[in-house]
Length: 273
Ligand SMILES: Cc1cc2nc3c(=O)[nH]c(=O)nc-3n(C[C@H](O)[C@H](O)[C@H](O)COP(=O)(O)OP(=O)(O)OC[C@H]3O[C@@H](n4cnc5c(N)ncnc54)[C@H](O)[C@@H]3O)c2cc1C
Ligand code: FES
Image (cartoon, rainbow, N blue to C red; front, side, top):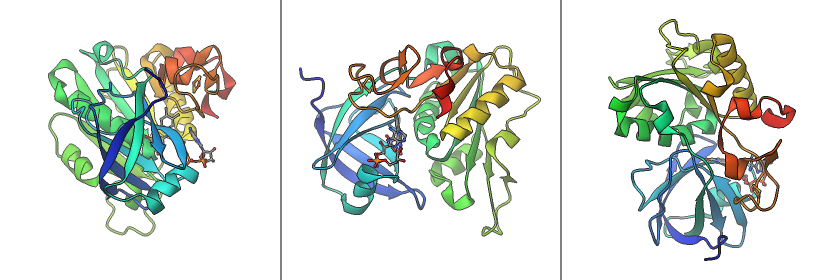
């Protein structure tokens, strides 16, 4: 089979999450099973293709949701031109997802920022699907403003959930007089005296600058590089370890990642570029 051949998929729902992020729900012509944290290549006919991490529940293979920040050619075309009923292509999944078996029995600290909550929503669905396997799930999520918080319905559910803990922060609440949560970057809410750091794992996903400071904070809190799981993004082309576009040191992010532990990456200065 041609590894570059995408599966046709219909856009069945378009959900505006924030001024810059939209979630698209697709029904592919055949199921696309994936592990949480793996990515797919999304083809928009006549425009091109780009890598995205499904934000939906990996237990549901006959449909897929992808949450997209509109930053450039393909993602802005999706925002401006794509409608329910349009066809796209999806190939994959590719790469390494979150190793849930290694997380079993441990406390999981999850830190996310901006569109980084997209892969993390999929991870949270996967964890909630078998929550008894994990000691505790603690999530710290940062957005630019209260209006930039995505997945508002799920966030509300998670804030009221007995199965996990969620804390939110925003960089600025200037135009939001009703905001009662924390104001400050996400590292300001990462300290938690009840965390079991020695036996736990720490997960981060977000823009490179957030990942850099979150990783420094994890290290200062006492997590070792092997305990820190980062969802890496590099410019990609083939997605299958052939073209060399996505290298970090000896690794290809498309094959050895996107989920990678910091001990694999700490020697390479380009990690957070
Ligand atoms: C494994 C992986 C998973 C991803 N998951 C998601 C996701 O779930 N949601 C989401 O919104 N985005 C995700 N991205 C980023 C997404 O692939 C880019 O935003 C997209 O390729 C931009 O395409 P464009 O044609 O709209 O932008 P372009 O016109 O190509 O570029 C516009 C801007 O985006 C930057 N850019 C382009 N490609 C990338 C890239 N691959 N990574 C980072 N910056 C890029 C460029 O430097 C430029 O500043 C992921 C990237 C990777 C590698
Ligand atoms: S995208 Fe081609 S080697 Fe990774």
